[in-house]
Length: 109
Length: 118
Image (tube, rainbow over all chains, first blue to last red; front, side, top):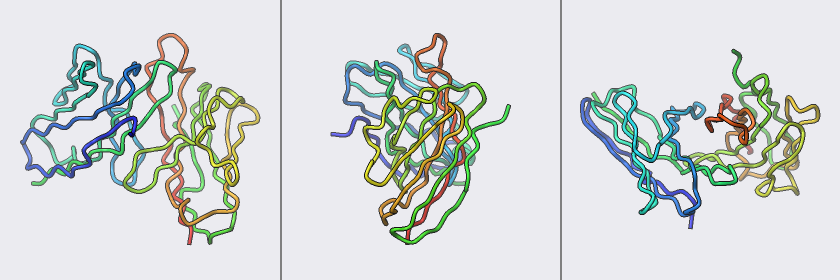
């Protein structure tokens, strides 16, 4: 079983829509969680960390469910510029990182 | 502040040839990573350096891949001989000491070196 699994999508949504997707992780000792954004043919960049109580950054909301071992990302009021692949990243207690394969989001006009 | 620098950006070689990629991390970052990203997949760690020492190379195919960070700053990743399945983007990333207090866990990636093996 992969350490981090994501729905690959693609999620194809119109501008202004809300889109949400999850990431599951297998190691219960995982300590920290992140969402990275990767534009086509570009490098990954940190979008946001995910905190236990959930957190927002503008139109982006991240949630963590330790009991069910998943994190989620919700994008409100989608913009064309939100089109990208969103990578789920999990950091273990020994600081080793595992990346998911990514969820592709395409926002259409 | 300058970001992570990588070269070359693109490389096309034939199978069984060799190739080398170079990375210069953000100044002061003790930890340097090399990742392999195959199309449609997430980045896979090849090797992690802490200063000039190897922390994790468990997923590095050591029969053909080698990496070094001799002076604890820039690093070179070499593939010899290359196989078709090595076609991928090789991403270098750096971060301050991940075990240090206040480290946010953010990795700073270079633009990557795209390798095509024919």
